[in-house]
Length: 205
Image (cartoon, rainbow, N blue to C red; front, side):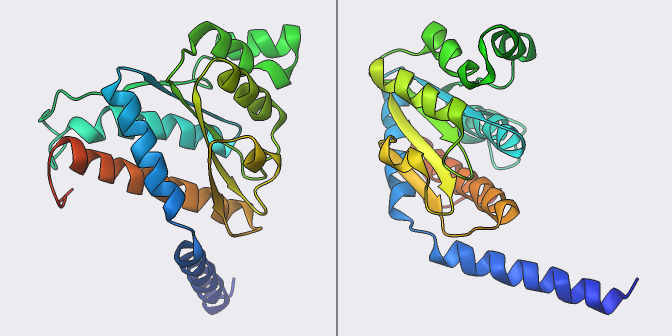
């Protein structure tokens, strides 16, 4: 292995990632913060979903909303009772695989929303292409039930950009970097929500 070539490749990856982050439109992120905070104030749920690596981001997101926002910077104590009601639709393996096996994978999220989704909830779908059939179906169900929909996408936004109420499009065609930016979006949004509910202007951790 040529170590210098590997280091150059890693450096190039990081430089492209930094460029993508700089080009990301930040306005939809502020709209996402506003929508999620409003749902919390109204006692509504935040429901997330994704496929593959995006499923991990969806699960990570509800952890940051539910725990990070109410915890101290050292993470060892709770400093706010202004909690977020969160759930991730790809976390129940038995429910998801049961729907997929019996009804088809395109229904694994929409069918769950028929159990859980109420007016005023916020439904967040993560799809790098913006064309994931099960997330498109889920958004149709969510909108029919009066929920607000937020998409995290990439490339040209795909079909989801025409369905979602808020669409965050990562300006990249490289899926792994789209996933990187989605996680950064999650952390940036969670930090802003933490500052808002804890009435703070900065965070140390």
